[in-house]
Image: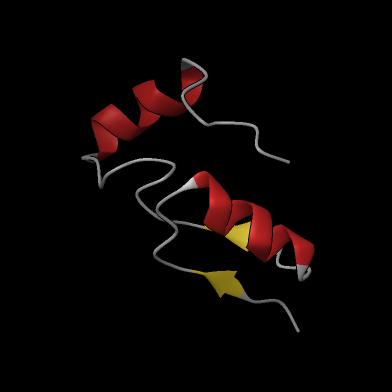
Length: 52
């Protein structure tokens, strides 16, 4: 089963979720909601954090 943890807001939550095996995370820790145009710019400019 693949699970997405929603509502991740800080690094400690990311760390704990990774420890228990959760691979897919989303939430304000990564970005606030963005319009499509801004999302494209965010992704292509390297805005996603590598917390792995």
